[in-house]
Every structure is written in structure tokens, then in C-alpha cells.
Length: 530
Image 1 (cartoon, rainbow, N blue to C red):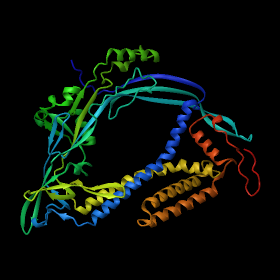
Image 2: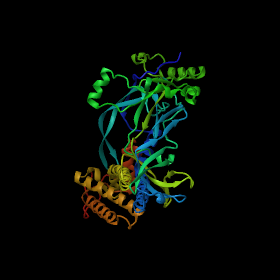
Image 3: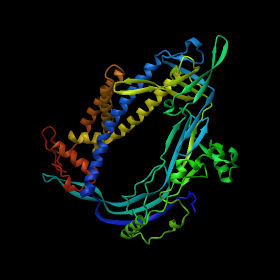
Image 4: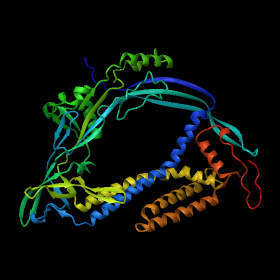
């Protein structure tokens, strides 16, 4: 008999470790910690370079589109309509004929411009927690000078495990107890969005006092980015497509958080699902409970089961029975998916149009593709509601700029450790300086890096004033931070940088021996040792 789908999460307590002494990372752990830290320090500028390049390409394509003559389909005469030659056109449709189909599950929804399959996996997750005492020690430099530093010691590490439904899979190989919390990695039907193929929009055209319907067929590539301003809403299949009466708990939630904008469809739409690939190969069945299709994890082979028992025996969890094991939760490896849909009543479209042939009355709308440098940009938008062509282009530009701003904020956060590391290379200890000095160092690093990237990508043709201003502000604040920051010990700059990275990576003191802790001389006067 097939198991049902359980939604209750469950938790288990793992092992506890006590590690006396320093919590330094040695051996392979220390090397991996340093490599991970170096990746975090080097990757953000490279990622920002890519995002700013994409921002420039998008801006250039949108700027060219807004200065291109755009044919208004709702007001165009018949002779204005294009034939073989493509023309950038804009239209607003109040009637939509579309069907979005998921062929893997045999599900089709009429009136949907985009259908999203949201797959969830029953998986264990590991949650380590560590509590340490703060200890002090004296570390020596190569010249014999010393310095006192604090470090974590006498740590107690505890592991907890939670099993529930997640939008992603978790590899349990590196868990502290992988045998008792094994996560199968099956993924037969990953999350995916299906745009409507052959959607037809009917536009009401007015010209010379006459009204006429104009039909426009959307290429699926027009829906590749979805429908802007139209959030996905869940789909539930119920008898006769009638919304069920909400429970007391649901009514209470609706009172505080508002009602869910769920689309209810009749169960008759699922008549083809028993013959689809999802059902015949992966044993997916419709179980309801919010519109879910469920596939239980089949019992593993005898060899796999015996190997798992052996791993549990080696890690000491074979007879570790807990209350969480009695909870009616899902089984790790179970999979379920549901659907979300975009089905606006009114859409505005902007793209290239042409007729299929001289006898056809249906226009074909596809994205306009242009090359900006080595990047291919497409101008093909579908927005929910009634919007002018100019408003659609401005909305796309705002979305592109907002995405770029997110990565610029991340660069600002990255500038905090980067400024401290640069200060170490220049003989300054920014971290030991005043708060105002640390702020100036961060702003200086942020302005210099972002201004440099802008100069490389944009040059001086576009936004030259902003680029120059950013450079001037970054350089000025960086100079002020250098003048006012605390001087650090003398020695080789590259060794000082390595010792700082090693300290951040929690490697032992013998891995990071400073040349000296005696600050550099000021006006010919030698400072005292710390």
C-alpha cells in the first residue's frame, strides 16, 4: 500500500563534543578555511564586474528601444501593420487565449501565460551550535616582540537535525551522523516554469472611428522572464473547481494575513495525469492537501540498507531511538510538487511583430534581439495591466538598476574587511583605529573599486561626472583614513597580509608569525614595544 504524504516536521538530537584548548583550525581544516576566506575576498569584485557589465548592456539596449519608433497596435491602421519586415510594436490586450502545459505530469491550465512547477524534497538538515570560552594568549613575532590576543577555547559543539519539506536537496555526506540522517538525492522532476506555447492576444483597435479586433500570437520567448507585475498564485484541484469551506484555523489566518489568492480548478483537468511520465515512471499521484502531487521514496535495495546500518553502527546511532522517530513525518527522499500560475486579465506587450504571410490576419510577436558588445540583449516584455511602451521600458530599466544596486550594497559590505586588509599592506591597523577612521576607510575602498569598475565598463561617455565624483570621494576618504589610522608593526607587507588572513581564518599562531609588533618609527623616534 502506498504511503500518504505527511507534512509534520521532526527533530532529532545529535552528538555533543567537548574540545579542550584552543579552537584553532589545523591541518586540512586550516587550509580549507584559508582558501574559503580568500575566495570571499577575491570573488566579490569579479562578480560586480559581471553584474555592472550586464547592467550596461541592458541600459544600452533599453535606451536604443526608447528612441526607436514604436508602432501602437491599438491605434494603427491596416496599412501601418508590418508584413514581412519586423517592426517594434506595443499593444494592450483585454482578451487572452492561452494554455500552459506541463508535459511531464500531463497537466494543462487554460488562460495561463506561465505555469510554474514547484518541487519540494523531504530532507534532513544539520544545525551545529558551538559555545566557547574566551581566552587570552601572548604571541611572539620574529624579532621577539609580543602581543596579547583573544581566542576561542574549550568549545562545546552540539548537533541537531531537522527533517521537513524544502525547496532544495541537501547532501548529507558531510553530516556528523550521515547514516542516521541520510538524504537520498533523487530529483526526477525539478522545479521548472512552462510558458504558454501559442498564446493569442486579442487587441481592440480603433482607427478612423472604426473598431476592429487584432490578433497577436506571442512567441514563448516573450514569456521567458514571466509576466511583470503579476505574482504567481497557487493552484489547487478540487471537485467541480469550487473552493472548499475554510477551516477555523484558516479563517483565523485569513483575518490576520489576508486570504490566499488560490486558483481552484476541477479535478477533471487531471484526467491525463495517470498516463504521464510522472505517474508511470516516478509513481506521482495527486493527493490534494493544497494541490500537491506526491511520490514516496521506494525502499532501497538490501545492499544499500545493510550499508546504511553499518554506517549507523560505526557512528553510534544504530540503537539511538528518539521521540522524533515516532512522529508521523515524511521520509527522507520523498518528493512532492505543486503548481503556481500567472494568469492576468489584461496585459501590455512590447516586441517585434510581423505577419506569417500576406494572407494571415494574425501578427507574430517575438523579442527583438540586439548585440551590445559581446552580450545579446532582447527587447520583449509582457506586463500585467495597461501600460504605455515608455512605462514598460522604464520599468525594465528600474528592475535592472535595482539588481545592480543589490550587488553594490554587497560590495559595500565587502569593503569593510578589504579596507582593513589594504591598511595592513600599507602599514596601518584600521581595525584598531577610531570608528570614524574605519568608516572613511570603508567608503574609500568602496568608492575606488566601484569607480574603477565604472571607468572600465562605461568609460567617460556615460555618467562621467558620477565616475569622477566617486573616484575623488573614494580617494579623499582613503587618504584621510590612511593619515588617521593606527600604525602597525614593521615588516614585510605580504607577510602582514598573510598573518591577518590567517588570524581571520582561525589558524594557529605558528602558521602566522609577524615580523614585528613594534610600530614603525614616527619622525625618527622609535616607538616602544607593545
